[in-house]
Amino acid sequence: MRQQNRLSSLPLSALRAFDAAARSGSFKVAAAELAVTPAAVSHQIKTLEGRLGANLFERLNRSLRLTPVGARLAAITADSFGRLEQGLRNLESAGLLAGPSTLSISAAPSFAARWLVPRLHRFQTAYPKIDLRLQAGDPLVDLANGADVDVALRYGSGTYGTGVTAERLWPQGTIIAVCAPSLAQSGKLSEPADVLQHPLLRTAIPATQQQPGREPIGIADWAAWLHAAGVVGAESARAVKRGPLFGTSQLALESALAGRGLALVPRILVIDDLVAGRLIMPFSAAVTDPYAYWLAYATSRAEEPRIRAFIRWIRDEALATKGA
Image (tube, rainbow, N blue to C red; front, side, top):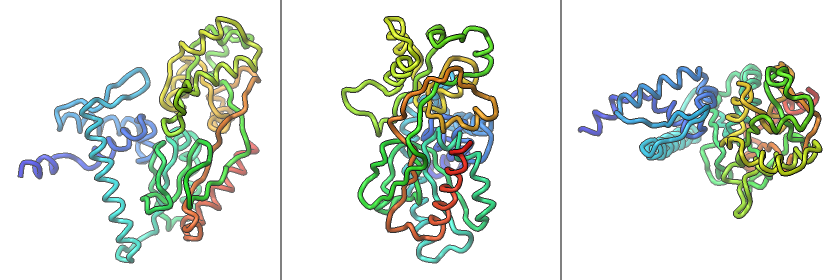
């Protein structure tokens, strides 16, 4: 009875907000997934922490980290919501649920927040009878064997298992250095070597793509970019190892937008920010992106109407973005 009373006192919306923030490591990405504001997500989690009497996150400088209690609760909510989602899919497949068709999308957090969400309303306008469910997270999903995800959008090598079709959304791209206009206008970024006087914001490659014995991609990429820009020497070698290391590109970009340093990211990820002037590319140096953005889905399900509709839509959106 005590467990039932404890559960009934917890707001479902707060649990959903916590689950989304725990998976993405960002209130902003969780807000995009839930179609609410970051402030609303923060409020829901504070409410949940108050009901539970325990802190679930450590609020660090522009980033989040689960507390031990938060990590344990995250495992519980991930399992519970996952089983609920699978149960609903089973009912839908059996024809026992009426209503609109549902498309479940899993997207890399940074890609979801910076590219997908700003465009997703166009899919909803074109296909109003398809109900969208967007999950933000890096872990791979088993698309070919009954995962509760219809399509996945990932940044990586494109190898996602047997029975999975992976379509590259853009040809091989470049990784560029970006910063807030205020940083460039400060007069302290006249030539590429000047970047050494500012924090170099690094992004660690997702754990699913890390290779044992190799340093995080953020370190190696800044070294490659500095070399391409003609900035060499002992000082540059030290600079690439002392900047803050973020868990996602989204977090690094939030810091760059606040004028806290320069972020190194795939160009396609910040195309909207560059066009809008929120970020600028202070120097033309760029390096080849070793990875790409992929659309992945179970090969056997490619002709399902809702999946086929999304494939067509995102191909068109990717083509339009290429020329931006």
